[in-house]
Image (cartoon, rainbow, N blue to C red; front, side, top):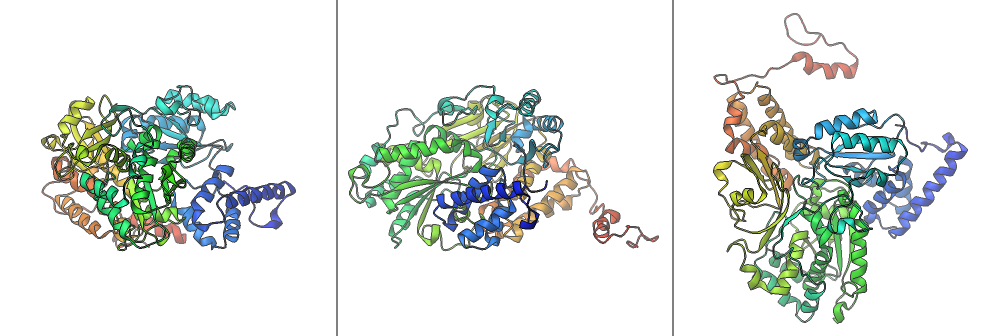
Length: 628
């Protein structure tokens, strides 16, 4: 669709000139709002898109001039993130989740209904410019799929009938909130600043999510302690990062504390983009005060004065809610200067939204994004605790980790270590979804077995369980006795249950490979190429053209990914490797046995693209030797 803004002033009509003047004034105001700081480019682009529905190309040049940076710097950021658009994407922009769970719960028919009713295919905008249809990776609603974002508002548990109603209402001129007829969700979801149909689905509360939390108690306690004492207590608790990597939190804090710098930062990583994970969404909704108190405690311990809450774009509907909590913390003197009466204790928090990039869950990519750049992981060392945000020592902790810190301060390290196992102390908040009666959020102690989990969520006749999202491990019934812990089955929180009716290779492994291919930042040749090759091999197997050698090659090629820079690349082959290891018969039943080689090479198809590029008609030579 043609841009609203012409490329050159000579093409402008009077109305267009007036509109472009209005555009420039709006963008100028946005830039001023962020102090003309180039490192706040993400915020500037997000607010510009919110203003116009997309980011017109002339805006890029204007922002570059105003910030005194290259337009290329803006283009590289703009092109990296999934939710940025440079052309109109519809008055109502629909992003329908295409994760494995969404497909399990009926996404295909929902998508077909959207296309039929809107009058356009996915990836396009309707002829009248009213509705744009787009696919997107997991939006953090795996417990209530199929789900979609429509102009940032979440619509859950979609059916073909509901899609017909929604599109009909939008075409009739109703407001988006009028198209939401399901009612509001539970808890804080019903607050005026959220007004969402999303449900929390908290099925089991443990010590961290338990009722009775009183904001400020942990801060009032730490200000009577020396920072080193706070770190010692955290180390004694043996808490490890809850984002998946499991690095000891106290050790990370101690390194940052000892780093020499006048400025340090605390980052909360709320960019949960792993399909099947949604626990952070619930914590941000129901426990934001605890989270921000944990950030302030971390700031006191390491000597940081600034906290940045990095939230995934899909949770933009929580923005007003989170801002209100931050402002409330300032009024209570839990944020700001001389916190809780402690002279010299200064700490404040701002929110930084992403724009759709799974790789930004990696801590250095997250920092790059917060600096207004592409979310590409950095080479390490140096690590963020030594040189992070703007080159200063930076702590990056997960949402759940920071909430746990508050309870450790309030109840003591010994209390925390009394739960879980010797090597994996405390509790773990899980996001459980898929083929089970009770999908939702569960807080358990480390050491729970997979069988315990399946019984708890009402799952029967289970074929497989994905522990840790696509980057984790796919296990079968013979391993359901294994335990969730850092020494056995470690997980950042996602557990997906698959019943006997699921085609694990087609429905699960292929979907996960598509996810990794789409989300790779492209920086490493390993991550950029190997998942594509694995997908081609898998499709060959699914098409009954595979041979035993293909399976061996998939395992060999997967080893190459170990040379990747970050966790995404390192784990991108896990869906293939773990499924071959634990479900080899599924592959063996599809391949051709007794055959060593089958390329099924199609010469005509191979040369067609090159011939199209130069305007030639592909023909095969009489002897089959090639194209004429």
